[in-house]
Image 1 (cartoon, rainbow over the protein chains, first blue to last red):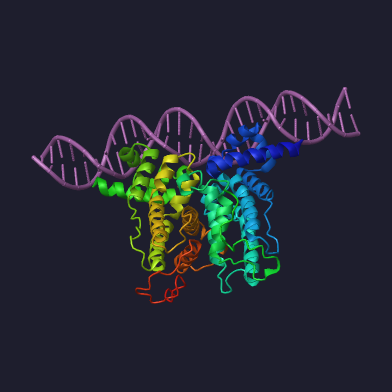
Image 2 (image 1 turned 180 degrees about the vertical axis):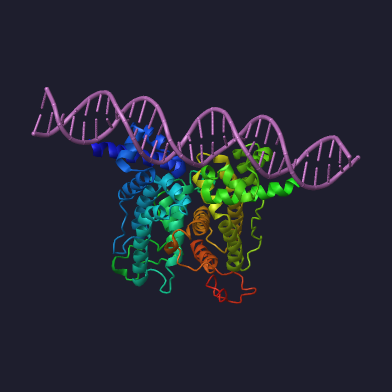
Amino acid sequence: MSPEIEARILAAAARVYAQYGFRGATTRRIASEAGVNEVTLFRIFGSKAKLLQAMLVSQVVSVAVPVLPADVSDPHAVLTRWCAVLLHYLRGHADLIRKTIAEADERPDAALAACEGPSAAAESLVLYVELLRDEGLADADLDVDTPISMFMSAMFGDALYRDIMPNAFPQPQGQAPSKYVQTFLRGVGLRALPLPARSRQTGGAGPRRGGR
Amino acid sequence: MSPEIEARILAAAARVYAQYGFRGATTRRIASEAGVNEVTLFRIFGSKAKLLQAMLVSQVVSVAVPVLPADVSDPHAVLTRWCAVLLHYLRGHADLIRKTIAEADERPDAALAACEGPSAAAESLVLYVELLRDEGLADADLDVDTPISMFMSAMFGDALYRDIMPNAFPQPQGQAPSKYVQTFLRGVGLRALPLPARSRQTGGAGPRRGGR
DNA sequence: GTAGCAAGTAAGTACCTACTTGCTTGCAGG
DNA sequence: CCTGCAAGCAAGTAGGTACTTACTTGCTAC
């Protein structure tokens, strides 16, 4: 019965920490949120710091980082799907990420752990864009770092700040991935496939017809 | 002699708050940082909450938002300068912004006040890009919102996360504004000036020679 | 049935928190 | 000189914090 109660405590700790941060996540609040006696926290985890650290790793391991394929057909659709998954993940952990990043100077290891998933996602994107470039679909002298850096910042910004600064994100949430990808692909200078093997001539990197 | 000591307290409160956040910014720490007796805080400001609110407005009014001109010559240079000023401001207040945004759900008015400057900057950028578009320098059917939203997110991301996630920002800090603007202008589809009145043919929106 | 163990309960420790009160010091203006 | 006032100082209040100790309950396995 221990693992069940342990999971309940970790879940409660995640909720309380996401709302109040490290200092505000008191053992009293976590125990009450978990419907558990406060002493139990200390018996299982030893201290508040160890409990919250365990909570963080339990949240991080539950990540499924989206990975981009190694072929270059229909980059807009592929990237839009990838972007939507990433945004969904970031939004689901927005409060936790906000608090952890704000307290990064006091708990740097926690911040590093929390950024692990997005870092892996960015690496996947780097590989994909380099593939596009090497296939001749983007500028040969392209600096891939800057557009990707900006794109990832856009992901973080949308996920973390949309609810706080709504006027800074006028695109509806559902359309955001497609629009971000569209702008991103213009930024890397996406061209149509050079070999007319299956050139459906979709109009290069221009706006797609769908998605109203 | 009161205003001098008041300013000293506000400055100390800003430093302590930026490092520890609202909960961690104890009156004891602020008083010690200001070299002032703790009772003085309460005599001048009444309560910790009022003191920190006064601190926030004192920080916000010290903002000089960069404004973009209403002419379209040399957009890359103009935007790079504007971007550098904005980034400099955001970096100078990075800790304060991080904490305030992380605690936005507990103190929403504070978060709104802190985002006031960047919002004004974004509005200025919207006007500028619409001007570019109306002058025929960018796509006529351009959706200005998405590139600007991404660009502002890139500013926030660089200013707030560069020191925490250094590998996500491989560009050196000095080159960042120019590179961000370059990618942004590609994203809005910048063209060279249509009338060859003073076409020094600098290569359109290409990279500038200066800036090490 | 009973031994063992996980969890609850109650109480307490030592310290920090915002904030108050009463008194003292030092300085500027009349 | 002395009056008023801003600030310091010392102490205290009421409550919160992490964490501990000692004891009780309830369930499970032998």
